[in-house]
Image (cartoon, rainbow, N blue to C red; front, side, top):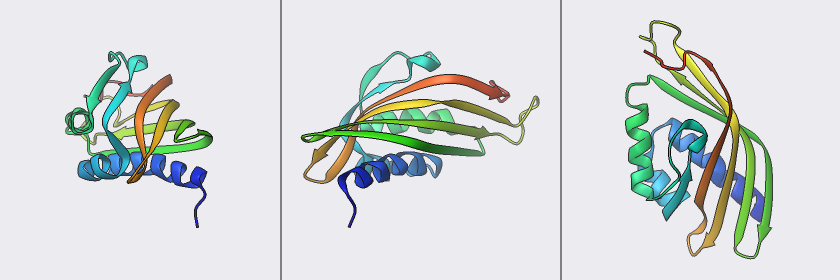
Length: 142
């Protein structure tokens, strides 16, 4: 039997695994609340409230020219209060494009601050903030 902390960490792992395998419906149905506050301002995007399907569509379009995406996360810190949880983790996202002329990979290294809420369907993420530390490799992947 999983503890609540383990359930929340597994939820965050599903976020990264389903994204890597481009399982958008599973992200919508198993990971996100209907509306998600997405803050990727460290990458230049304005923070915004989006419905879960719009988050997935944004990522689908962003990844459509890539041959592979791979996330690795760890060092989870989870603070559960009532029916909510703040989650911090380190994360690395590797993007691979075989046809890129100046190197086939780009790697984003940073951390996430996330928030999960407990719903009748279990824990779901309602807020994601990525905090970029640095980018390595070919930033344009062209």
